[in-house]
Image (tube, rainbow over all chains, first blue to last red; front, side, top):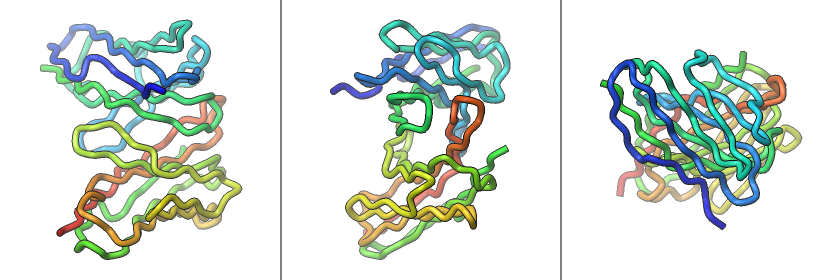
Length: 113
Length: 114
């Protein structure tokens, strides 16, 4: 059984650019949640995808968007990058959206200059 | 809005000591609570998940408790080892629409000294 994987591991962008982060969910999982973790803080919920539909969203602007594919992998897209978007982006997969244990990937470290 | 607080922010103990990490939450309508471990620059490793109907969960040297009425959870680590050094995060999940998102505390950074 493969765990949750994310790519790339590190990324450097400049302000105003766009970025796409990728996540492969654990085998048998149909739900992916994305979180942003600033340095020294706990992760903040961005949104969740369940069976290819957005299934809840945290307090993030519309320039944060996502997709989930038929194989349940997922993308996080961020447009018009700002300096404050610099963070560790974590995805978590679970067997369902309603309270099952979430298993996290290693994260993508994004630096916006 | 659910808020989760972890105190202290950092803790240093000698090897072999038993210790307790604290987590408090504001919304007693909690669905479940999960404890995680995070090593520097890494993702999160799930340690224990406690459902709202449970009082505690145990895994090896770890024991987590949940008291909904007081809005508190504790993670007990027995016979601490230097390998336990990491940041420990608790996260509560309440019914928020249909997503049941995890709301995290800021974590307790634990250092176990050899």
